[in-house]
Image 1 (cartoon, rainbow, N blue to C red):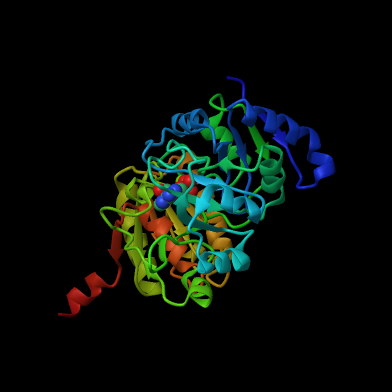
Image 2: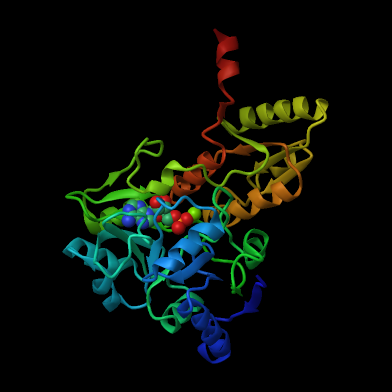
Length: 354
Ligand code: AMP
Ligand code: MG
């Protein structure tokens, strides 16, 4: 299949032709990769079971891993979800349009192919103008998982989408780099107590503001309520480890580890804060941004993991980025990318003390 790559600008007068073409593809059951404020999405008609099947195939995603349905008007929520509580409406009022997904009981209009066989549906109303134009033009209900091939880091540019999906889908809409760079926060609103299933830009404190008490699902839960959380995610091709501890200890530990691998003839890389980047001796050092600029760290993470793949990094060591506001979401992605492989930089020093 020939994949068309076209630019859009978030201005209806400039994007009209692109949106008409894209909507034609969606109505015919085809697939289009689109920018959103979180990451690029791989879009199909959420109400067409055949489109859902094509999304699973293009991504290589297991079909029990449900898709998020994207809407562009609050009124459309009631057409696909039922038992919508006052708390759910309050969340929608505060954070929609935006990087928040709510899991609700589904109506029959949504096929089980879209929800991976579940009686619930995950719904999001994105704020990105291109995404909104596209959803409107395409009939209002768009299933859009992240546009990466299953298991790879999510796509934050159209180039990432081309790398993963060229030849597999009809169109890629290039809206430039996404803003946030991490997928939406997912909150399950079907139980007595709201539950965070995936961390994101809308953090726990922001949810508590509206919801009061709220639970968080354990990140390594064996039977997660968001089925996607059980699959291997975001992994770079090289072996990634997160090194934790005090700054000096982390720098010393990472330099010792990369030194060892370089001597073995391996290609090494470090993901470092701006403050520390010039202190490493690895083959490749990627400055992810200042510790004080957590938006930048979130924004750069997936792109850096992809860059390190392209650069052939075999052993990758990352600092810990447990920042105050987005640290939960950043570390969730980084830990999954590392397969929870964490090295404690302080430990060897403590052991020597004993
Ligand atoms: P992605 O589309 O790559 O952002 O991943 C979507 C995430 O949402 C996956 O982890 C899914 O398992 C989760 N998800 C989608 N629909 C539901 C649902 N109905 N209930 C729980 N989790 C869901
Ligand atoms: Mg994904």
